[in-house]
Amino acid sequence: MNDLDKILDFLITHFNKKRNVWMPNVKSIQKDLFPNYNEDQIISLLNQIQNSRPDILTYKSTRAGDLIQITGLTESFLNQGGFTEIELGKTVAEFKKNDREKIELEKAKIDLELAKKTLKEFPKTKWFARIGFIIGIILLLKELYLLIWK
Image 1 (cartoon, rainbow, N blue to C red):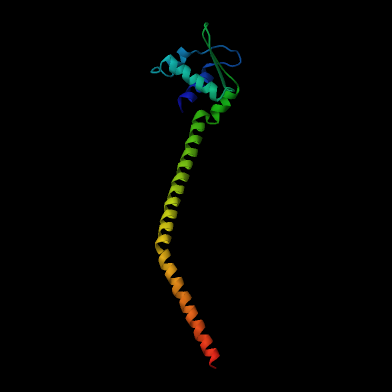
Image 2: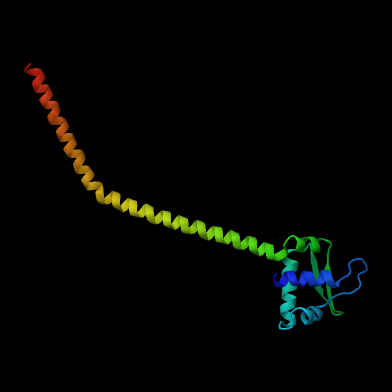
């Protein structure tokens, strides 16, 4: 579970949505979840959640205090894997992309090797064609000679 999911889980467990009883603030999140983080880091995490999924959390900082509200979608989002699942999906997609790039690079190397071999063998092939052409003409002349003298 990453930091964003930990914040969502904390908000779900400590906030009664029906009565709007306890309003968590940045300091309570810092104290209970991330004692090593400063307030700006917590605010940054809350802004990340709000920017990526505004439908599950709203965060506003006012003079009266912090306003953090979760919606009914927050719990279902977290149950479906939350931001950890999104990160995992990105990681898998990135892995597949890197794998594809490796395969394309190997293919390009093999194509280059094959092209070099073809260019290296091309003069030999040219001589074989010339020799075959000359043999064909000699056989044609032989057959014409035999046909005419019969």
